[in-house]
Image (tube, rainbow over all chains, first blue to last red; front, side):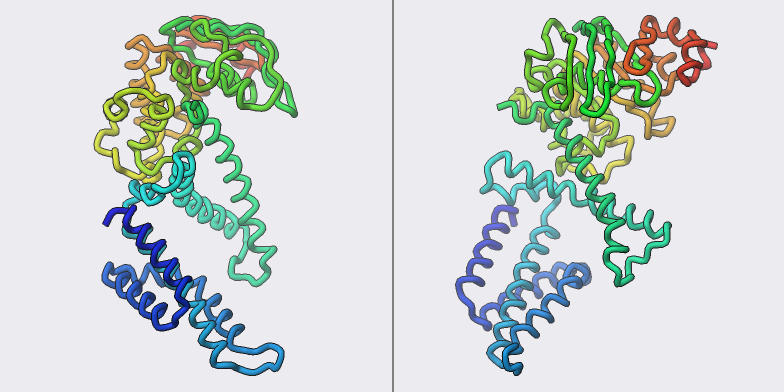
Length: 189
Length: 244
């Protein structure tokens, strides 16, 4: 399937999920997406994608289920929470399928509806992802070597040494990249 | 295409880097620019292709003409047809999703003809044929450096500037890049290389300019300049084996 068709299907599905707040529809779409992911043998990879979001799903369902003023558990709140979480699940699954089943070189075609410069910027952002992930790995290793435990609950102690060098390096690269693009005639129109 | 640099001074907001550089680079030259770290080599390169004064913030005076074009009066896009620059770190300049897209980027910006043909020819020149659809991030450092050179070569500029092109390469890749630069130079292009490795300059460059704290300490035929042991030792630059 072409990346254009995939993004059109993804947008249509997202609009339908928002326009028709029906738990059966959302459950059916979510199940279909999960089956599609399984058929591509991507389940394990998908679970690692989904892992950080599981806590969000649980918190959303809990907050919706409990009427805070009373406080009592309500079935309608639980169903609302389930619907909201399943919607997020379906959207995440669709994005995952788009990214994982499209060759990197054709991913930017999915943004055909954007103007030329915006499309190029999207492609650039996608091209930067492996670099950012590698940078995060390198910075984390460098900080681990200096005794930082990233499992520690003290977020300021663990994440500041990760985020500050990452921001500095990313900004530096962005500035230099802008120079390199200008040197090759970008924005000459 | 001759380059004339006359009394060029440039200060970044926090410090003065170039303090009156005057240098002529002849058409078809293979010039090496060397000097200690912070002596202004990269800043001088930015002056030649117009990034200074158009894009880099700072105070600029003096004049740089490339084939008669005053860099102050022409846009970077116009100058980029004449002068191509390969930056020191390939990761600063590669931003496309495939090798071919990366090479075609400049050609499309300048609305050149035969985009695909030129891109494939440039990739062939640097030995990257067959990698057209590869994600650039998956290339080795040497291959990325070659990709950056191909991206500039495809635009067919008369002058090619390379900022420490081999600083992160192994010996074999270094020799391969310099061999390629010599071939490009033989075709009549002017090649300017910013290089710390004076052995490479002694072997490949026709002329050399030594920068010292924003000024030209010495410029002339490579062997002659690189034989000035006193100067090189004072600046902490290695005297190449071939010139001892």
